[in-house]
Length: 151
Ligand code: DCM
Image (cartoon, rainbow, N blue to C red):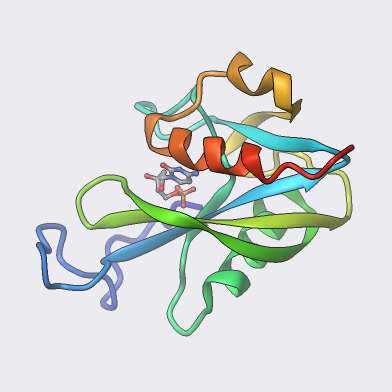
């Protein structure tokens, strides 16, 4: 979820370079239900709108990544999830931002595009290439596909 105030004091300068830590961590969820993976189409900002992603958002101060994931998916999709394992790897976003992905299992609720998205789709393994994923999400989606539980 994009905050309207920019940037908060805990966030690094936009030109933070190597040796300045991970910068802003964005956590996203590979959310599974009955052998399918959830894909979410972004509605904003304009340069990302229409592209598909694993839903998530920025870590807030004091939060663990798992806590941030639970909060973001509650806010954006209206569901409760249980985080699982981290998908190995880390992918650069805009300067100073990195994407890290966890698997997650749907506990309750039916995902709805409440914030940041205008469409959601549950994709089975053979449907994963049917949407235009954000470039930075593609390696995570490939890894997530390897972990798709049976239907
Ligand atoms: N982002 C991304 N891939 C994701 C989730 C988020 O590239 N799976 C990017 C989009 C934004 C930033 O991370 O530039 C913060 O996301 P949000 O606006 O959802 O908080």
